[in-house]
Length: 89
Image 1 (cartoon, rainbow, N blue to C red):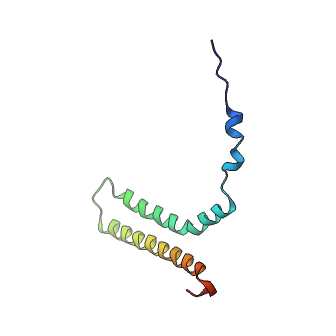
Image 2: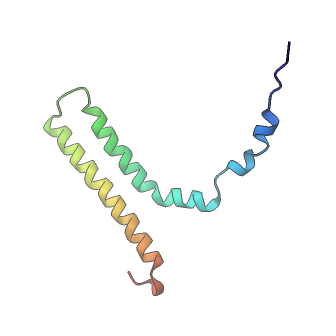
Image 3: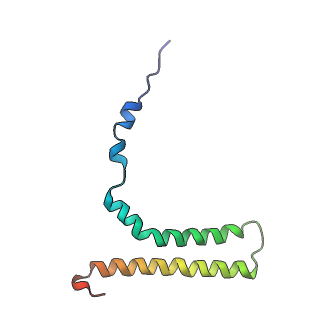
């Protein structure tokens, strides 16, 4: 009978390199309003999956869609403003 040897040491040896860098964490932080707005939009859609949407549901979805779009526009405007020389937007 052959014994199977675990390879945990080989797998976990690179665990430190698998952590996100500070730049990646900063990018996630910048995108967090977009992520949260998208989650809110998904929540609004999930509520209506098993029933016919009411007028209140439709308003919630429209409001969440506008917030998600506004968050994306704000992120793009910040990115465009940061890339222009002289700080002009």
